Image 1 (cartoon, helix red, strand yellow):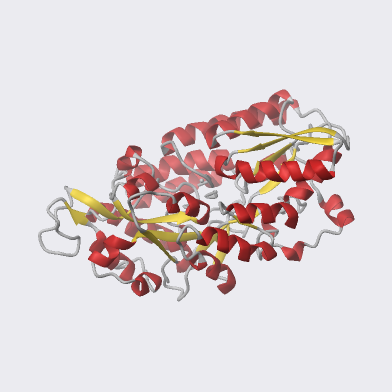
Image 2 (image 1 turned 60 degrees about the horizontal axis):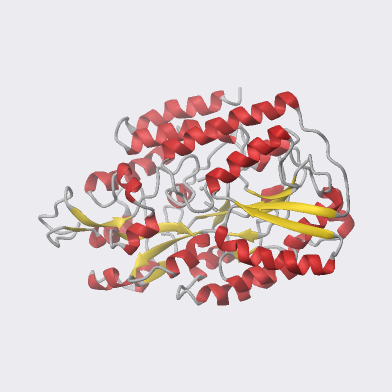
Length: 460
């Protein structure tokens, strides 16, 4: 939580407590879906297809795709509706209950497993095979994300994202930190490596004393070396996953759809202990500080020098006025490699749709080179078809960022998939409480063991 859009693949506007409550409410609504069932739709090949998405920045590109599609399919009308992240899922869950869900909607890897498990969306394996769609045309790793817990396919990737470090170029230069240093950062959970050294160097108190200098006052910080958006429950997509994954740790007992989690693993808890330690040292803001504005706003205001963030935010950070930013890859960890979570959105077809035939044609078009080329030229997000990546790089390059910090990790094989799980709403609520208590210093890092037990209990 598009992170990427954790799960908050796109912009985050609320505290973790509110998000946890929203997820808990979602769990209740989904239970209702399971209790009452969903009325089966029809396979109509024409008519109006309602399509929902949450990302306002992408709306113009997909509106253009809709116009192009309708020119080719005059018997199908596409009606697009866009809602903010929290409202989007709340309206969608309500729609499932009342049989008023959209025919097609932008779906997230953190949610679709639950929808598939409850029969709320339909698999598309037969349609993909009949259409002869070449799955190898998509960026490596993106198609696998949409194989559900039942082994069936529930989407075709429409974009992809990964993680990097946005940083204030001017602040770095003033501190004597070069672009080469930023590109070669190292990290470990013991002393933080050169990553912590740079974070300390870029932290400045109100008297102008840096975090690595004598007399630094951590109670009166003007600029934090590293920004903090949230505690990162449950997967730390942009917050801590790129660190934990370089220790050899993984979230659960399976690559996807696991039932036993590993938040009790010493490697994970050591990572969180180091990360929390940045707050104690004054190098990263207290969790409560995040309510004062989003990371991009804090960076624009000069409050943050570095923010770990998703590629979907590139255009947003590039548009910030009054600040000169640059982009660096995530640090090299104990494994000797970097790590960055890779995610991909896809579009799902509601089981209740009365025009599933037309809905499939729209989903197919959204995942085609024709539509994804339009998205690539828009320069907001990176489409999933590999042939459009260069155009996407050129468009995103207009922001002034070198986005190879994102794409090189995919080429190097140092990315890892967004974890697909069931009981996502309950896991989100449980881990939000647990991680926020740790990051607020209300409980010790060792309390994550008890949190892990509560998460595992959801699958028993």
